[in-house]
Length: 139
Image (cartoon, rainbow, N blue to C red; front, side, top):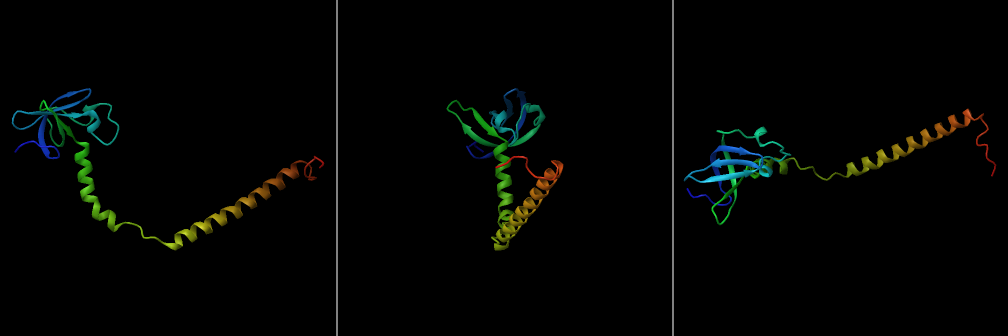
C-alpha cells in the first residue's frame, strides 16, 4: 500500500528527540511526528506520550519533494472523535426554549431586588455607626 496524504499508517517508534518522534513505516520509509502533532494539549516532553518500540497509528499530513513523511497523532485522534461524536452531538443538541430567557429575566429581577435590599441594609448600618443622624455633610 502506498503512503498518501490523508491516509492512516501504522509504524514503530524508532527514535524520540526533543522535537518529535521518528516512526518506521512500510517499504523502509520513515516518518516524523512533530512535537506539535503529538497531542491536543501542551507537550513539553514527547516521551510523556510516546516510547521507543511502541506501535502507533498516525495520519499522514504531508510528503515533501524529498520523500519526508510528516505524521500526526493529534489529527488522527481529532478525526476519530469527530466521527464518533457527530450523532451524539446532534441528538444532545439543546432545543430553543422560551422559558430559558424568561427564567433569566426572573433571575435578573431577583438579583436586582436582593441587591437593593442589601444596599439599603448597608446604608442603615453605616448611618447607625455615625450616630444615627445620617451624613454629616450639609448640602
